[in-house]
Length: 279
Image 1 (cartoon, one colour):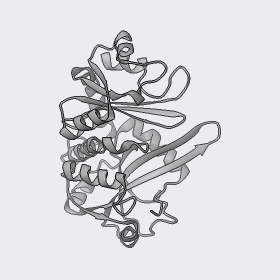
Image 2 (cartoon, helix red, strand yellow):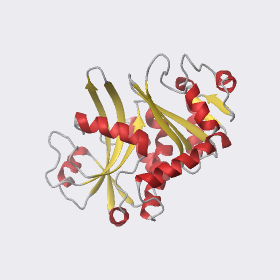
Image 3 (cartoon, one colour):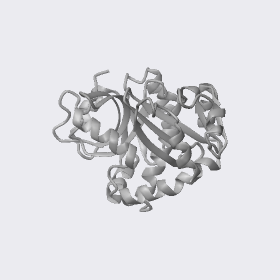
């Protein structure tokens, strides 16, 4: 498909901001009331035929409750993008680099409002952004039901006036952190690393909760079934590791953080996280 992109500077800002603040960008209740009364256009990455497009549609069908949805291809998006009363969910794969600092290669979903000048060469950096959801790398499909459930719940809370600012969201996240150890935490073997190589390392490292390292198929089933368990989601690039913990039943986020990848702090789960989750 034709590419939807962000400017390099915007990509860096958004990736860092998401790690700190969560999915909502626009906390205005009136904005989301407008979205709720409107249709959300979901733009396929590849005409609806790719594994990602099919997984995204299934995830939205099962977990998106906020408003009505219509699936469109990129050509239709180009027709509709300049109408400011339209709202779109876009999947954005971006690579941005800054010598000596960052080398990102991650994917996001954005909810944006139409922009009267449209996108130049697919660049949506000037479009009003309402929400941003980090979706990880090319193996992200199994997490989409969970991520969509979290996005829907976050928006519902803002629309209802329960969360009105970044501060509110940060307070909620800090409160939720203690809930990580309240349920079994499930993760993949790919979320381990040289510092933490097994369930035993996690337990010996002092983590007070229960943890299970499972196959991709088992994790996908627990997410799809909405079991009352916690799921670790790690999105990584060559220089950064983002860790999120969500409850598969409610879609609540219990933890998020990121670190620059070093020999001492590799990508994936690390002892630093155990200390935070034990508090």
